[in-house]
Image (cartoon, rainbow over all chains, first blue to last red; front, side):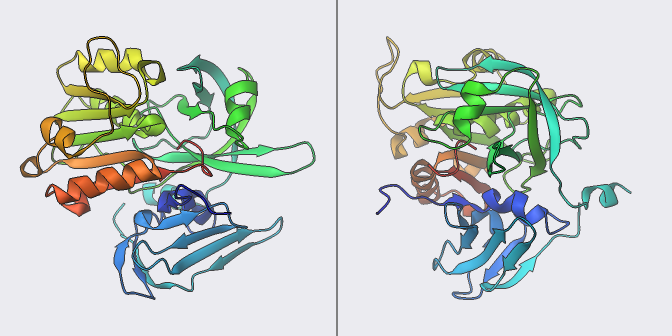
Length: 91
Length: 250
């Protein structure tokens, strides 16, 4: 089945899941894609929530930046596609 | 100390629905009292979680519709046909019911009163929700800096917050323009999508250095953001928030 409209959301859709694990808001963090080197605010990533779990992809090369999967007992975080996340220390 | 308070792990909280306002035939606003709500910035959102009797859980992200006043929070939900969460929120939930939420979340698509420069808001459909929170925070901050809202909507009956928007538009602080895509009210000649000519005619120019907030369905947001950048707006000041068929209105 092919979707006739884009199914992705933006990085904000991952905010709640990430805030369960990290103590800071990551959607305003600057992320560098390990695939194409694109650097941008994580909120601008493309987030797919209709997969098992949640997948964030680079808006430049579509490479996987991170995946979050919740089970009844644990949360799995796969950050394979990020070279870094730059989080502001100002709050 | 405040920093310590901000940097805590986010957990689910149970709020109570205290008021429900029908906004359109398919959208309604839920006013929720959340005892330990820490406050939020305009543009932030929250997650709502429903648990079925068999333990199955579904959560969705919704934009906060209200500016924080120290009391209750508001979210406006548009029903998504065949949706998992929104039909319950729009058709079943009633005043007095508990609602499980966590938030606020998101620190990018936000407006802060101390932020410099005009505010340009561009909404597609229920994408107006977080932009309404920004307008409410803007009004609470005294109506400065200058702000404009362009609201693309199918027909007059689809307009969410019509009376609030009329009031805001009458205040001189905010210029409100509706763009009807299917059916316009009598006397309104234009029916069609937001295009380069319309943006050029009614939005702040790149020279005004506005911060632009675009929220709506993914194709709408992509199209509008591309037009703005093509018109010379700095991409760093064009903030987008998209929602799609899977995420429900945000």
